[in-house]
Amino acid sequence: MILRLKTKIGDLLKEYPFLLDFLAGLSPQFARLKNPVLRRTVGRVASIQQAAGFGGMDPADLLEKIRAEIERRTGHLVEVERGPVSKIQLADRAARLETLKDIIRQLHRGGDLEAQKKRFSELIQDVSPSEIAEMEQALIQEGMPEEEVKRLCDVHVQVFKESLAGQSLPTAIPGHPLHTLMEENRALEKHLQRWNDLLNRLEAEQTAWENLKPEVREQLAVLSEVEIHYRRKENQLFPLLEAKGISGPSKVMWAVHDDIRAMFRDLKPRLDREEAAPVIGAGRKLGTALADMIYKEEKILLPMTLEALGEADWARVKKGEEEIGFAWIKPGKEWQPSVAPDELSPLPSYQRPTASIELAVGSLTPRQIDLLLTHLPVDITFVDETDTVRYYSGTAERIFPRSPGVIGRKVQNCHPPASVHLVNRILSAFREGSRDSANFWIRMNERLIFIRYFAVRDSAGTYCGCLEVSQDVTAIQALEGERRLLDWDEK
Image (cartoon, rainbow, N blue to C red; front, side, top):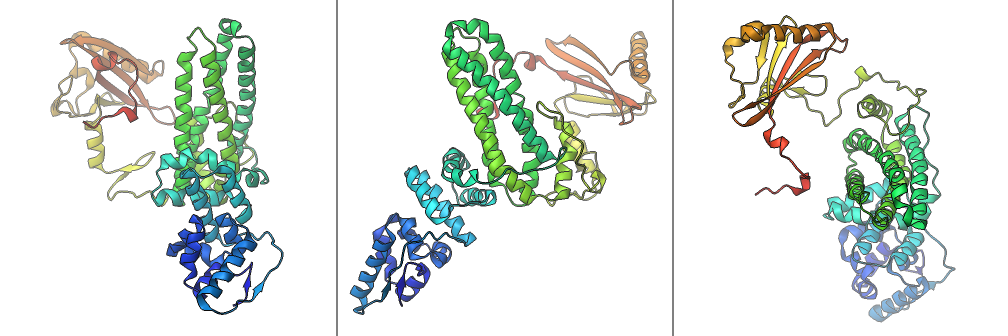
């Protein structure tokens, strides 16, 4: 074999298996070649020159060391073709993925950022958003905690930033969900500029804190509308990406959303303090996080999403947008999906239960519906448009007792004569459309009971009946502070 800088490591190890231990002793990076998967991916396509970059060595020096070891072990002279060192990039996707994963693993172990950036530049240089997403997902599937991938998210964006900077932003016409998300980002950038200007003024004139406090509070409320933007990503984009088998990036980005939400919660009580310094520090941290998220969306998430989703997928995204709402902007109407909403087939993850009833959203079996209604933390009774009692939730401990005998009776016959005229007034107001609800609360055995009546109408506004909801709100009334999901103690 003639040794060249472009000689593949895989070919070298096949010819001289003893080089595996030798290379492992030269660099911790080469020790990973003992992993069969790595040998089949990176080892198969990486040259001696690329391996030198992988192990942080000079290519010519590595070539010479390999030559000397082969001659020492075999006793045969080895012909070496020494040419100029050129920049050869890894082209094989599997090998690129393994290298990307290893760069992040090295950072995870405390490796030097600049060294890994150099290694990335020498071995890969250009990276696509889908490769970053694939790398994150593979690391999670291999056991790296999602929290750790999230912690390294900012760091690995720095590694790839130069490569990502050269990529153009995704484009779409007004009305397309992707265009709407990006327009919201442009609006957010303007609001962030205003936010940073306020913090700069505050830093220069901390004595003006009391005067600036209303403006800071108002601008923080404006920024907090980003919650709508994040909810649309979480509820519209992420499920569709998961249906395509792409879940890692969604999990990582959702975790970063939650970090930003925590920053908003942390900042709000600081506005009531007398000093400006805590607001300035927390405010700058929030602004940086919001700006970084714009970058991650437009350089990684949205290009990847545009590549992964088809026309029907974007039609699904658009169908649900109005329910969540929009932040700061009003979407255009130029883009309309070619697939009508009622023509959309269910996602692969949607499995309709046998003998189920199709509902406006999803489907349930009659048994599931009954269990759902009887497990609500409220008592409900439904009276149809003819004032006939059609249903009540037969829970074990109803606030107001019911028996099957009320089903089919006129609701007026279920109330004492003295209150029938009030029942009729409520139902008349519902039927006429002058009222949509009626609320009452009473004390019963030292408990506070909240009783609400709701007019039930269809999509055309036609009156279909009345829903009575009764709830013991004693414990709710006593709630103070916060208790979040992460605070739950299963004991």
